[in-house]
Image 1 (cartoon, rainbow, N blue to C red):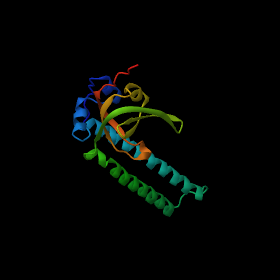
Image 2 (cartoon, one colour; image 1 turned 90 degrees about the vertical axis):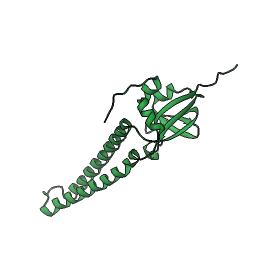
Image 3 (spheres, rainbow, N blue to C red; image 1 turned 180 degrees about the vertical axis):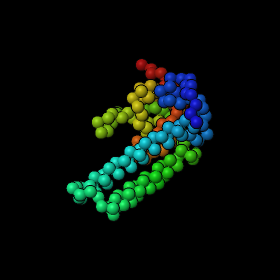
Image 4 (cartoon, helix red, strand yellow; image 1 turned 120 degrees about the horizontal axis):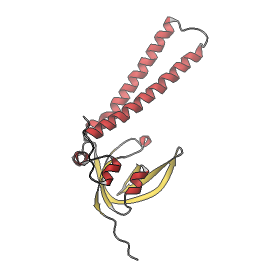
Length: 181
């Protein structure tokens, strides 16, 4: 499923994509490597949420009668509650991975504008605008992209709580114009 990554430019190396990924993005789909990374990230998020919900549920049930061992009807209740959580998070996972299997890659072309970083829960998130689209990117990508240069970027939509648009790949269309004194 995964192919070895063979980037040909520094931008590809920073964003972890190669010509196969770029070709797939141009046709509006995720490449197999991008799809695998997308699915793995959504799976880990869903498992983390399910574990937190299960632990909170068990802590709540345990706090109701902390000094008595659970009777058989209560242990069935625990199994039913945990099974319901598992079902809920499985359905949420299925809903969240739909973009990986559809033609969900969009593109925008425009000049790069670097904005001030935004502190988000103690982490500094770098912001760039390309055309009318806003992206939150790692510092390495923020630092590499040339302000004023024209890029064509390929992205997929995520929820605003998950970070907004996910930048998949980019190609330089035109360098920034020279500044005249």
